Length: 234
Image 1 (cartoon, rainbow, N blue to C red):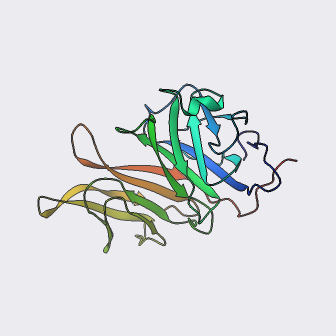
Image 2 (tube, rainbow, N blue to C red):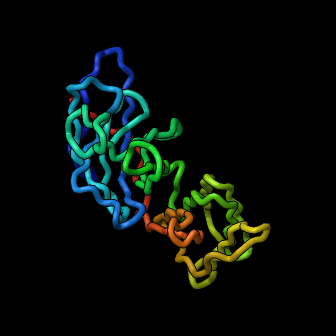
Image 3 (cartoon, rainbow, N blue to C red):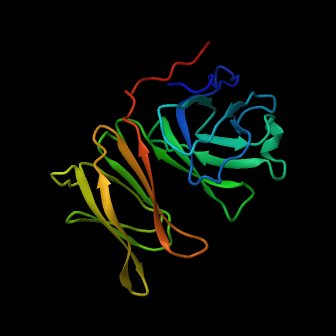
Protein backbone atom coordinates (compact mmCIF):
# COMPACT_ATOMS: atom_id res chain seq x y z
CA UNK A 1 0.00 0.00 0.00
CA UNK A 2 1.35 3.44 -0.92
CA UNK A 3 1.47 5.55 2.22
CA UNK A 4 1.95 8.99 0.69
CA UNK A 5 1.67 10.87 -2.55
CA UNK A 6 4.58 10.42 -4.93
CA UNK A 7 7.66 12.53 -4.28
CA UNK A 8 8.53 13.75 -7.76
CA UNK A 9 10.88 16.73 -8.15
CA UNK A 10 11.08 18.48 -11.50
CA UNK A 11 14.07 17.37 -13.61
CA UNK A 12 15.39 18.29 -17.01
CA UNK A 13 14.94 15.74 -19.79
CA UNK A 14 18.63 14.82 -19.60
CA UNK A 15 18.66 14.10 -15.86
CA UNK A 16 18.68 10.36 -15.02
CA UNK A 17 16.01 9.49 -12.49
CA UNK A 18 16.12 6.75 -9.88
CA UNK A 19 12.76 5.44 -8.74
CA UNK A 20 12.66 3.80 -5.33
CA UNK A 21 10.17 2.56 -2.74
CA UNK A 22 11.12 3.25 0.87
CA UNK A 23 9.90 2.05 4.25
CA UNK A 24 11.08 4.03 7.29
CA UNK A 25 11.74 2.17 10.55
CA UNK A 26 12.78 3.55 13.95
CA UNK A 27 15.31 1.36 15.74
CA UNK A 28 13.75 2.23 19.11
CA UNK A 29 10.60 3.86 20.46
CA UNK A 30 12.38 7.12 21.33
CA UNK A 31 13.32 7.78 17.69
CA UNK A 32 10.18 9.63 16.73
CA UNK A 33 10.74 13.20 15.42
CA UNK A 34 7.49 15.16 15.40
CA UNK A 35 7.71 16.08 11.71
CA UNK A 36 9.97 14.56 9.07
CA UNK A 37 10.31 15.58 5.42
CA UNK A 38 11.90 13.52 2.66
CA UNK A 39 14.25 15.54 0.47
CA UNK A 40 16.36 14.89 -2.60
CA UNK A 41 19.68 16.64 -1.83
CA UNK A 42 20.65 16.66 -5.53
CA UNK A 43 17.71 18.81 -6.67
CA UNK A 44 17.36 22.57 -6.94
CA UNK A 45 16.63 24.69 -3.88
CA UNK A 46 12.96 25.08 -4.83
CA UNK A 47 12.34 21.31 -5.23
CA UNK A 48 9.37 20.02 -3.22
CA UNK A 49 9.66 17.75 -0.20
CA UNK A 50 7.21 15.18 1.14
CA UNK A 51 6.10 14.78 4.74
CA UNK A 52 6.74 11.20 5.86
CA UNK A 53 6.43 9.11 9.01
CA UNK A 54 9.07 6.97 10.71
CA UNK A 55 7.31 3.92 12.13
CA UNK A 56 8.31 1.62 15.00
CA UNK A 57 7.12 -1.47 13.11
CA UNK A 58 7.11 -2.83 9.58
CA UNK A 59 4.01 -3.17 7.42
CA UNK A 60 3.05 -2.76 3.76
CA UNK A 61 3.20 1.05 3.77
CA UNK A 62 5.94 2.59 1.66
CA UNK A 63 6.91 5.96 0.23
CA UNK A 64 7.61 6.05 -3.53
CA UNK A 65 10.26 8.54 -4.55
CA UNK A 66 11.93 9.73 -7.74
CA UNK A 67 15.50 10.81 -7.03
CA UNK A 68 18.30 12.41 -8.96
CA UNK A 69 20.79 9.76 -7.85
CA UNK A 70 20.86 7.22 -5.02
CA UNK A 71 20.93 9.61 -2.08
CA UNK A 72 17.94 10.67 0.02
CA UNK A 73 17.78 12.94 3.06
CA UNK A 74 15.28 13.67 5.83
CA UNK A 75 14.81 16.97 7.65
CA UNK A 76 12.54 18.49 10.29
CA UNK A 77 11.47 21.35 7.98
CA UNK A 78 9.96 21.19 4.47
CA UNK A 79 12.27 23.65 2.73
CA UNK A 80 15.44 22.54 0.93
CA UNK A 81 17.63 24.87 3.02
CA UNK A 82 16.90 22.73 6.09
CA UNK A 83 19.48 20.28 4.72
CA UNK A 84 22.23 22.64 5.85
CA UNK A 85 20.69 24.46 8.81
CA UNK A 86 21.98 23.49 12.23
CA UNK A 87 19.87 20.88 14.02
CA UNK A 88 17.38 20.24 11.19
CA UNK A 89 18.98 17.28 9.40
CA UNK A 90 17.34 14.05 10.61
CA UNK A 91 19.53 11.75 8.54
CA UNK A 92 20.90 10.82 5.12
CA UNK A 93 21.11 7.51 3.28
CA UNK A 94 22.41 6.14 0.02
CA UNK A 95 20.22 3.47 -1.59
CA UNK A 96 22.43 0.53 -2.71
CA UNK A 97 22.81 0.12 -6.47
CA UNK A 98 21.51 -3.45 -6.34
CA UNK A 99 17.88 -2.53 -5.72
CA UNK A 100 15.06 0.02 -5.91
CA UNK A 101 13.17 -0.98 -2.75
CA UNK A 102 14.56 -0.60 0.76
CA UNK A 103 13.90 -0.41 4.48
CA UNK A 104 15.66 2.58 6.04
CA UNK A 105 16.42 1.93 9.72
CA UNK A 106 16.98 5.09 11.78
CA UNK A 107 19.68 4.45 14.41
CA UNK A 108 21.08 6.64 17.21
CA UNK A 109 23.96 8.78 15.97
CA UNK A 110 26.73 9.89 18.31
CA UNK A 111 28.79 11.67 15.65
CA UNK A 112 28.15 13.90 12.66
CA UNK A 113 25.65 16.65 11.99
CA UNK A 114 22.56 14.43 11.55
CA UNK A 115 20.27 13.37 14.40
CA UNK A 116 20.29 9.75 13.29
CA UNK A 117 22.37 7.31 11.30
CA UNK A 118 20.37 5.50 8.62
CA UNK A 119 21.02 1.89 7.65
CA UNK A 120 19.44 0.77 4.34
CA UNK A 121 18.30 -2.83 3.85
CA UNK A 122 17.18 -3.84 0.38
CA UNK A 123 13.79 -5.52 0.69
CA UNK A 124 12.58 -6.52 -2.77
CA UNK A 125 11.27 -10.04 -3.24
CA UNK A 126 14.42 -10.94 -5.19
CA UNK A 127 17.01 -9.91 -2.59
CA UNK A 128 14.95 -10.49 0.59
CA UNK A 129 12.65 -13.42 -0.17
CA UNK A 130 9.83 -14.79 1.93
CA UNK A 131 10.82 -17.16 4.73
CA UNK A 132 14.20 -15.51 5.39
CA UNK A 133 15.96 -13.47 8.07
CA UNK A 134 18.04 -10.38 7.33
CA UNK A 135 20.57 -10.07 10.18
CA UNK A 136 23.08 -7.22 10.58
CA UNK A 137 25.85 -6.90 13.15
CA UNK A 138 26.41 -3.22 14.01
CA UNK A 139 28.27 -4.04 17.23
CA UNK A 140 32.07 -3.65 17.39
CA UNK A 141 32.54 -7.39 18.01
CA UNK A 142 32.46 -10.54 15.86
CA UNK A 143 29.14 -12.34 16.38
CA UNK A 144 28.25 -16.02 16.03
CA UNK A 145 24.59 -16.80 15.54
CA UNK A 146 23.65 -20.45 16.00
CA UNK A 147 20.31 -21.51 14.52
CA UNK A 148 19.72 -25.10 15.63
CA UNK A 149 23.04 -26.75 14.69
CA UNK A 150 24.08 -24.27 11.99
CA UNK A 151 26.50 -21.39 12.66
CA UNK A 152 26.49 -17.96 11.01
CA UNK A 153 29.51 -15.75 11.74
CA UNK A 154 29.33 -11.96 11.36
CA UNK A 155 32.12 -9.42 11.25
CA UNK A 156 31.37 -5.99 12.75
CA UNK A 157 29.17 -4.13 10.27
CA UNK A 158 28.36 -7.24 8.24
CA UNK A 159 24.80 -8.13 7.11
CA UNK A 160 23.81 -11.70 6.27
CA UNK A 161 20.68 -13.02 4.59
CA UNK A 162 19.61 -16.35 6.10
CA UNK A 163 17.31 -18.21 3.72
CA UNK A 164 15.46 -21.41 4.67
CA UNK A 165 16.60 -21.43 8.32
CA UNK A 166 16.62 -24.82 10.05
CA UNK A 167 13.35 -25.41 11.83
CA UNK A 168 11.93 -27.76 14.46
CA UNK A 169 8.75 -29.80 13.92
CA UNK A 170 7.02 -27.15 16.07
CA UNK A 171 7.79 -24.51 13.43
CA UNK A 172 10.28 -22.74 15.68
CA UNK A 173 13.98 -22.07 15.23
CA UNK A 174 16.30 -22.61 18.19
CA UNK A 175 18.66 -19.61 18.48
CA UNK A 176 21.83 -18.94 20.45
CA UNK A 177 24.05 -15.90 19.92
CA UNK A 178 27.63 -15.23 21.04
CA UNK A 179 29.97 -12.21 20.94
CA UNK A 180 33.73 -12.63 20.70
CA UNK A 181 35.10 -10.53 23.56
CA UNK A 182 38.17 -10.94 25.76
CA UNK A 183 39.52 -13.66 23.44
CA UNK A 184 36.50 -15.96 23.89
CA UNK A 185 32.92 -16.49 22.71
CA UNK A 186 30.51 -15.10 25.30
CA UNK A 187 26.79 -15.96 25.20
CA UNK A 188 24.56 -12.93 24.67
CA UNK A 189 21.13 -14.32 23.78
CA UNK A 190 19.14 -17.53 23.55
CA UNK A 191 15.57 -18.30 22.60
CA UNK A 192 13.14 -19.66 20.06
CA UNK A 193 12.34 -17.76 16.89
CA UNK A 194 9.12 -18.47 15.02
CA UNK A 195 9.82 -19.41 11.42
CA UNK A 196 8.80 -16.40 9.28
CA UNK A 197 6.75 -18.55 6.90
CA UNK A 198 5.62 -16.38 3.98
CA UNK A 199 6.81 -13.26 5.82
CA UNK A 200 10.33 -12.20 6.84
CA UNK A 201 12.36 -11.09 9.86
CA UNK A 202 14.83 -8.23 10.34
CA UNK A 203 17.40 -8.63 13.15
CA UNK A 204 20.03 -6.13 14.34
CA UNK A 205 22.83 -7.00 16.78
CA UNK A 206 24.12 -3.90 18.59
CA UNK A 207 26.03 -2.78 21.66
CA UNK A 208 23.92 -1.04 24.28
CA UNK A 209 25.59 2.34 24.92
CA UNK A 210 24.86 2.23 28.66
CA UNK A 211 25.46 -1.38 29.69
CA UNK A 212 27.96 -2.09 26.87
CA UNK A 213 26.27 -5.48 26.45
CA UNK A 214 25.61 -6.81 22.94
CA UNK A 215 21.88 -7.17 22.38
CA UNK A 216 19.53 -8.33 19.66
CA UNK A 217 16.69 -6.21 18.26
CA UNK A 218 14.13 -8.03 16.12
CA UNK A 219 11.40 -6.73 13.78
CA UNK A 220 8.72 -8.87 12.17
CA UNK A 221 8.23 -8.01 8.51
CA UNK A 222 5.38 -8.67 6.10
CA UNK A 223 5.56 -10.87 2.96
CA UNK A 224 7.49 -9.21 0.13
CA UNK A 225 5.59 -7.20 -2.43
CA UNK A 226 5.46 -8.45 -5.99
CA UNK A 227 8.39 -6.92 -7.88
CA UNK A 228 7.06 -4.37 -10.35
CA UNK A 229 8.08 -0.97 -11.71
CA UNK A 230 7.11 2.06 -9.66
CA UNK A 231 4.50 4.14 -11.47
CA UNK A 232 5.42 7.81 -11.69
CA UNK A 233 2.67 10.35 -12.09
CA UNK A 234 2.99 12.63 -15.14
